[in-house]
Image 1 (tube, helix red, strand yellow):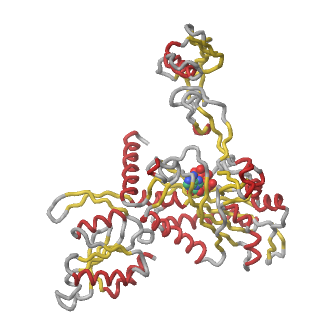
Image 2: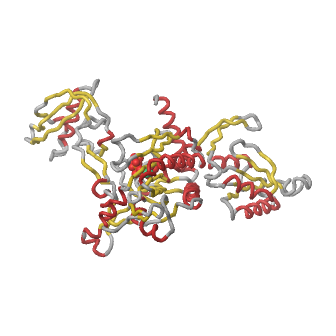
Image 3: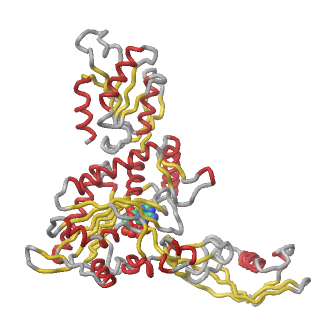
Amino acid sequence: MSEAASEKNTVLMEKIVSLCKRRSFIFQSAEIYGGLNGCWDYGPLGAELKRNLKEYWWRRNVQEREDILGMDGSILTHQEVLKASGHVGGFSDPMCDCLLSKARLRADQIDPQDGTVYQYSGASHEESGWSVDREYSVLVTEGQDENKARKTARLYYSQFLTDKQISPKKLELAGESTEEVTGTTSFNPENGSQLTEPREFNLMFKTHMGASAEDGDESSVAYLRPETAQTIFTQFKNVAETNRVKLPFGIAQIGKSFRNEINPRNYTFRSREFEQMEIEFFCRPDEGMALTDEWLEKRLKFYEEIGIPREHLHILDVPDGERAHYSKKTYDIEYEFPFGIQELEGVAYRTDYDLSKHKECSGKPLEFFDDETKEKLIPHVVEPSAGCDRTILALICEAFDEETVTDDKGKEEVRTVMRFSPRMAPIKVAVLPLLKNKPELVEKAREVQALLTPFMTVFYDETAAIGRRYRRQDEVGTPFCVTVDFDTLGEAGDELKDTVTLRHRDSMEQERIAIADLRNFLLDQIH
Ligand code: ATP
């Protein structure tokens, strides 16, 4: 991306974040206490948007399908479950710390650098007789001054001074030597300081349960689940035995997951608490590969149905060696966020790995009797795993638009409009009496509101000029506005009586519609 394009995208992202706060979509968690990093609260409009997404996902993947059942598992998870799944031992990122600033960096995300390494064996302060023996090195990249290395090294050694009054500048460095290096990832790109060796950092939130929790009893350890999938695997047998199912069939779940991400960033994109929408689709071994391709298509279609067009999505066919070791095929569905092309969902063929592991670790039989082949088998599984919050962010980025419009008086202005698909829009329709000081208009508008509220989210607004009220609705993405005016009351004759103005958000076009037809018209649009 060019520098200009990147700058433009940063500005765009700032506008989106600002709109989300100003119009009640998303707030920083515990903002009044300085914020809880990596956690977000959805305000009234954000909550509606999220409900619409989750309800539509549930409808398409559970209610409209005979072969997928829903479940809602607990967040607190038995430690044995996550030992079996490999999360306790292995769900980690390699991390290293900057020896100078103490910043913690993900080792696999450090870009390799070339330059000269300045090595030291220690430092001393002649006047006070203080000294320290400790190896430390600094990277100086091309074009940087070698004195930078000495300055950085003095700052590093000054951390060990007992007398904090001594200026780092007064320290004498010992044993300087240099070495040319290429492609090193052992130094902090921000300041050149040496990093610690990478260490594995487990991403799970650990907690203790029950009365023995305070004694540090190991058996009281539980975890906040890092993915919803494991509850599905652990309940596979119960669900399969208490419902009449035959292969292939799926179990779906929407729920919170928690990961202690080292670097929560890009607004809500990488959070520590987030919601997932996952399906485990169980099948015979020979169906796995084809079903993975089928699910990829289904999921792409779903994104289209909620207003994320195919051309803004990218499919990454994860190559051998980069997939989880048990996965025979994985597609990442990525979206063009303003901050880069990033993963929305993974569609993975996980073979029989999870159920086999749980069978082995729990000692319980997790086989399924296939009525068709009269065989007992551990089913294989294809998993479409989507992030609810990431999809919400994609919907918001996709919807955001600014256009220049000219008003009746020829004045140009910028109209901010969230072009949510009517299906996802938090408010479906705004009901507006033309004037608030005419009781007949207000009464009629309230009647229209009452007619629609049992079926959809309706917003009633009687303050400010009608044009301003339309703009407010544009900014939160309300696809339709309904205005009750004097014609509605019959002042222009019987033909227009009991009709209202229906204003379309995207085209700003207006048409007349009978109040009697309004409900069905809107239901057709938002379903
Ligand atoms: P990433 O590589 O971005 O960390 P992942 O490959 O670890 O993601 P999965 O474990 O496959 O993610 O989880 C499935 C989905 O859950 C992701 O596609 C994403 O939409 C969502 N998800 C995972 N981690 C986070 C997070 N920290 N914040 C928000 N959503 C997340």
